[in-house]
Image 1 (tube, rainbow, N blue to C red):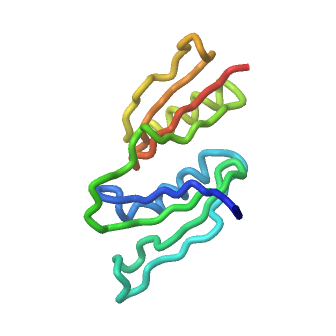
Image 2: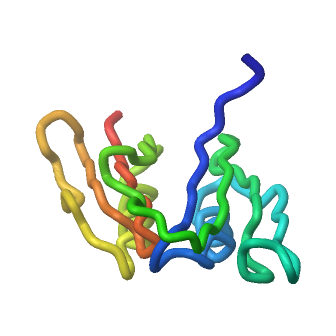
Image 3: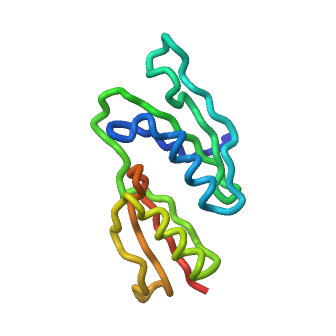
Length: 135
């Protein structure tokens, strides 16, 4: 096996937002960057300028993303989420607040007994995040 990479496909109401989302994530977390973005050109099967394939990293972990305007019967779901171990209370509070803007909280940031601070949310793009801080 050469590699395994998480791929995020932006569909439905989120189609066309892949580039916006990955640029947002790359600015939110340290050691993160947009590595490469390929866009559809005129005459291809998706709208011109939408993301054909993008690679980005969050804290050094590489991800892929793309837009799809096809009529899919699915979207992002909390049953698969990005789990982030935060280094400090300040970091988890800032990340949770920023990711929750325009999204929905599934479990507000709190001490649930298994963690000093934990929160679960869907961001404005529908991507599910679990943030954890325990020292």
